[in-house]
Image (cartoon, rainbow, N blue to C red; front, side):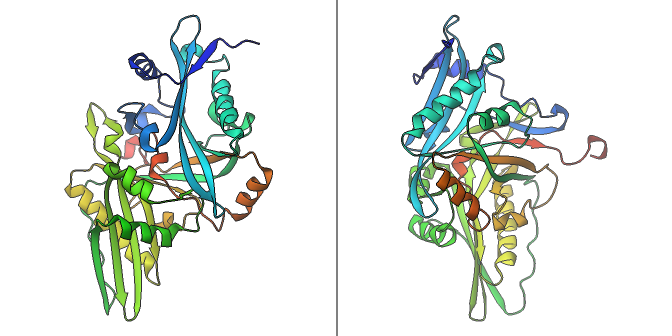
Length: 356
C-alpha cells in the first residue's frame, strides 16, 4: 500500500515553522501540576550537538504540509568495551491532523532501515507508561526495554549550608578548566561503563560552549583521598524553560561520580556547593537524569519539591548476542548519562496543590 507521506532531509524556514506547529506537551501530563515546561529554541540545535546527525521530515503529499518528523544523533561510543555506532533518536512527532495514519510507525521503520545495515545500536528514552502510543509503537517495531531512567530536579532558589568536615579531614573544592585533566578523571570514573563516548574530548571540545563548568572536590583523611565531580550543562542555550508567563534559567548536571572511602560525603558536599554557586549565578532550576543502576543517583534530588519522573531506556539491536550481553551486564555496567540525550524538560509539583 502506497504511503501518503514523503520523507525528506531538507530543512528550511517552512520545515522549522511546520515543526513548531506540532503540539509537544505529552497528553499524559496534568497541566495543573506543571511548574515549568521547556521548548526548543530551534529544532536544529539538538541534532547539531554531535558532528554526525540527521533530521527527517514527513510531508503530506496532498497538502504539502509537514506532518511529522524525527531526529537522531549518531555517536561513536563504547558498548561492552568495544567501539560501536550508537544512534540516539528523539523528537518523534506527528501533527494531530495526521495521526491514526501510521506515520509514527513509518518514521520508526525509516530509522531502523537506515541503521540496520551498519550494525548500529539504536537508543531512545520514552516516558515509562507501557500503555502510551509511543511506548507501544516502539515495542511493535523491535525496540526492547533495557532499564529505567529517572529525572531528578529541584529549584536552586536558596543557599544550602555544607556539613562540618570529619575530624582530621581537609577538603578542597574547585572549578576545573583543564579539559585534559577532566577527560582523564572521566575516563577513570566511567571508562568501563556502557554508552560512553569513545573520546570524552568530543564532549569537552565540540560541545564546549554548552558546558557551564566542571567542579571537583577532594578530601584527605590521613593517607586516603576521596574524590567527587559534577559537570554542568547550559540547557538555556538549547531550550526555553517557561513557567507561567516568564522564562526561567535551568542547568543539567552530568558526569557525576564519587570515589574513595568517603566518596558519598564528598559528593554530597560538592552537590550543595554546586547548587549554591548556580543559585548565585541566577539559575532557577537544576536537574539530572540517571539510569537505575547508576550508583550516584542515591544522592538525588538534593531536596524534594519537584516530582521524580520515570522513563524507559529502550534499545534496538540487530544482534541477539549483543542484546543478551547487554542484559547480562546492565546491573554491574551502568549507562553513562550523556547530557546531549536530554530533551524537553517537564517539571511537576511533588505535592498536592492544596498543601502548597
